[in-house]
Amino acid sequence: MTQLVSFLNSNGSPFLVNIYPFLSLYQNSDFPQDYAFFDGSSHPVVDGSNVYYNAFDGNYDTLVAALNKIGYGSMPIAIGEVGWPTDGAASANITAARAFNQAKESTSWELRKALGIFSFDGQAKYPLNLGLGSGELKNAKNVQYLPPRWCVANPYRDLDGVGNHLKLACSMADCTTLYYGGSCNAIGDKGNISYAFNSYYQLQKQDSRSCDFDGLGMITYLDPSVGDCRFLVGINDSSCSSIGCGIFCGLWIMTFWVFMYLKVLGSL
Image 1 (tube, rainbow, N blue to C red):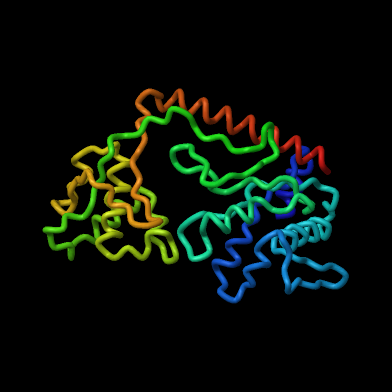
Image 2: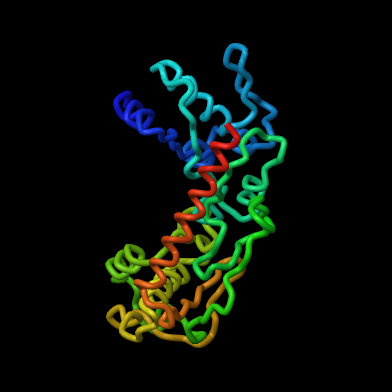
């Protein structure tokens, strides 16, 4: 580790670190929930003369202390990733994610790259001001969706042998919302199967063969969404070649990170 830090320092690079207070909450049921947010905790952690009111500050200062110990206390630190998921666990929801990402301006960390603030179709999940330009998130415009049809479990078939098909679907598509605490976890076994089938079906651009699953799936034109569990319809990206879109997205992301890196250095 010391050799890596020495290499970064000799090349003028900051120490890039990802800090996810959510993971501490997710992995430990006894972790105080308010300590995971920037707003301060009713049970701060006291370490000598240092008092930490949130997990982010505590984790960040731990890194500062570690760098000091090996002789690199003046090395700049940049936050690579920090954020809060909006689904997939009991504490992963839009309300918590927005509260985390809209932390008070009085906190000392200006760089808070949000995690999962856009849905797959480029639409903002919730209002958020990043302090860049006009500040507010902008939705992608002129998004072309596939036709309104979905793949669901065939109600006339025995689904006992669906295991391998579920494994295939979720190994390719996103089944995060089916996890315990997720928005689609409580819609029943058949609903969970349908969600997995549909996620794979949309990923395959609604190819009818991708909804077969040995006859266990069927295509429907009735939206199977239930409550907060939204069955998605894929996007039609045929107007943008994979190479062209990849280059554009890559350049946009690179420009964004160069800007944020310079902003961090300017605040040190």
